[in-house]
Length: 431
Image (cartoon, rainbow, N blue to C red; front, side):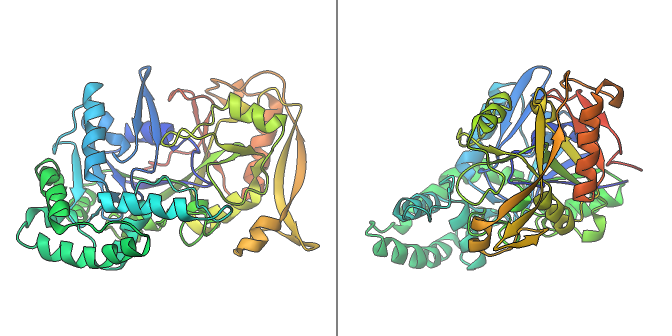
């Protein structure tokens, strides 16, 4: 059986929720392998919208097992709240359909506070655009080997020593920021108050996945954010705090890379970005406004308006290479309906030199000029199309040109938010 990794090939918000839901119907397990509750996926099932941030998409479907892997940082209070929201919509989340890696790192209130303090202290032009949810500081503590992990909640006798080590670091930071120190008893109470809600879900996830693979079950690995927000390969420093690329699925879930059979790159038919950072093809005109309004470009988690621009084939081509993308799921093609002409960025010009990739330096990323190729728009609509025959000829030409420019074939084509408005070209879950 094939195991599939789903990653975003741009700056996130590519429409992963619908595609993951579409695939999860055929998967046995759905695994989150990085990030935290700064991610946002919207699923529409039988006309009902489900907004997920931390939970794997599979939990909304009966008979599926959702897994939160060790590569995820978990705010236990946010997780409990999200489960409560789903339960109000009639979705039961229990240890029967959700498991959490016992070696996953916890996000605590001090992480959220530090995230906000740093962002507020940053000067104009240096703000990262963080969601202020404590994701970055939690990853810092993980790397610094002072994090509190899920398994630690089951050992209250060892928690005081772990808290002491954690607060030695954080109280020093807080003193430097002019903030009051945190008492160890306060943090201990915070952890013990939520332990009983989290511990029933803990599991040795790497072993569960190994057993599932041996049994021939299908595993879907669900990425959050997008490749261009990767801590190493994104537009640093305007990135998230984790690796978002396909290779992280192995490390962040505890499974060998040889088990990753198909990498599906979710790609929007134009480009969007939330928050700060470079955006070579951004449109600050009526076309950009048109894309934002027609595409309903508002962040699921933040509610912030997304910046909009033309499709950047050079950036997606990089994502294809870095992720080893097998096929593309192209989304929101219908948003381009009605445009007389459509531009596609094929490369950049920097200091008089043409480049076919985006350089890593912050200066270069801020100063590149996009090189455009102009394609004809199309009459008619692509909205709701479920076969190639339903698409205008010029829309098909646009799709084929994207394939050529990014060096990857289209596996799926999404033509509306509805899950059935999808054209299947190549089955990621091929046997």
